[in-house]
Picture 1 (tube, each protein chain N blue to C red):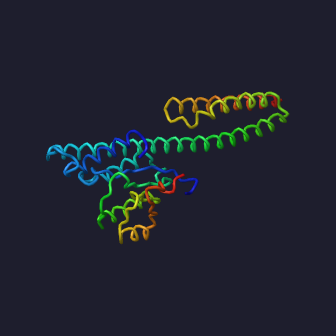
Picture 2 (picture 1 turned 90 degrees about the vertical axis):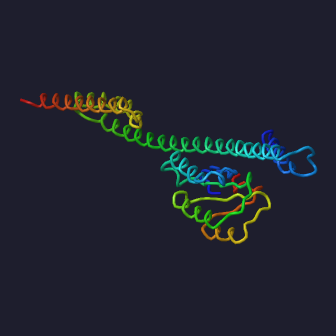
Picture 3 (picture 1 turned 45 degrees about the vertical axis):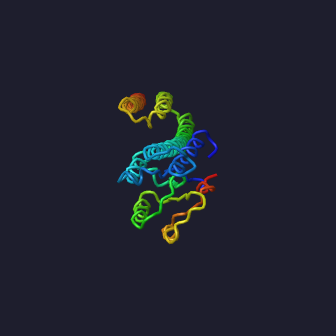
Length: 106
Length: 149
């Protein structure tokens, strides 16, 4: 990982799927909390505590989020793969890690 | 999943998964729902704790970097003031030299207040600058008076 980057974690939990707009609320909190420093953050979105299937709508959410947070990493629960979507996320510049690697953070 | 909290999460998730199976005798729909809810709450709690700690670490790192940048800026200001002081020492006019030398500690004292983001801090800086200008003006006037025939 880039030594200048500052990692912050967003854990995806079941309420992200029951409570509409939860993802964007969390992104808003991050922009309010870090302000101008938001661009120097590495946002680690972790699915370690919840392992849902991803949809194309959620992939488009990542595209939007990348406009504010240029560095986003996805951490899968151990052994989870999203066939097709993993490649799409990687194509957008999002690195994908297995749960054991903690998003490349030492 | 080594911490106590995560063990609780594992235990509750296990209960939720086993609630409807034969491995958990005497369960009912309510029991299953309670276990699922508890597992969700435990996941949310552990996730939140982790997130919070990551934010605290990030904020601390940002503040460390800001402090480092401020220190570099202060060092540059002090170096510049030092060189000004050195040049002032060589001035031939005693009155003007003393006035300018009196001003330098005022500037140094206020240099630390430049970053203060409140009205009091700004006021202190403005007052310092005014007194510095007045001191220099006094020195210049004194020098002019000594030059008059």
